[in-house]
Image (cartoon, rainbow, N blue to C red; front, top):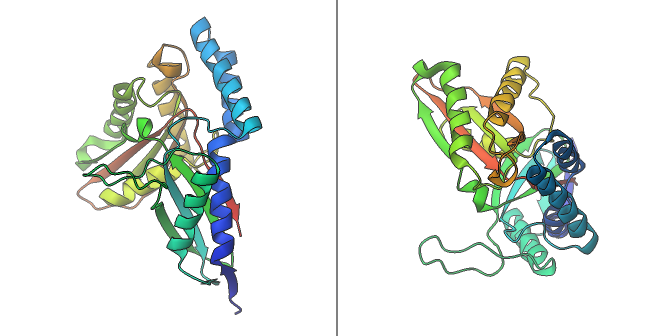
Length: 281
């Protein structure tokens, strides 16, 4: 079987572009969610917020200006085909160089710093990189800038199995309720159930990159997503936490087999921008 070569220069170029596009050009699914929210809300305040979301997205795309001042840490999901050979350098360094260039050339705020000294590195590197080996000869790159108004509201908890599905549902709803206006709602709720402490968090983070309205292929999980979405929207938090019918755009759940002694649950909350872009090389 032949091996396909992909140059690190091509990877850097692609990451640079995705960093800028993800921060300035919202996906059609998010724009449609804004329009639907505008139609759904009764409150004049809530309606006006959705109008502002739409105007902000329009200006951002047309002028290439960041949607939000918090342009996030650069989270990069890599699906690496097992028949791909990266040539010309190191994959991680190529990704970081793409982030460095993208944030500089796109005039995007660098937020990456030492966790204790708080000294800013000035270029938003290193990226947060997650690599998954997959069949084939393609390389898929997804850049998902993660602002920390929403990231700070995210949690991982390991439950005793006795809590059951109802206990898990209660916790997810409670987490959104306790988050209130902090993550700039309406939110997208990524949920990881199962695995270990870190696996639950990882699949919850990846879940928020799923297109809005796309259900989990497991019908039981898909039903749970819709049940949670309905209950969360009954909370009345609304756009920007000022009250309304739309507290969440969607709930995306991913699961993974776990140990007999636990139910790990991660809730990763995303703001109303739900920024992410992908490319396949």
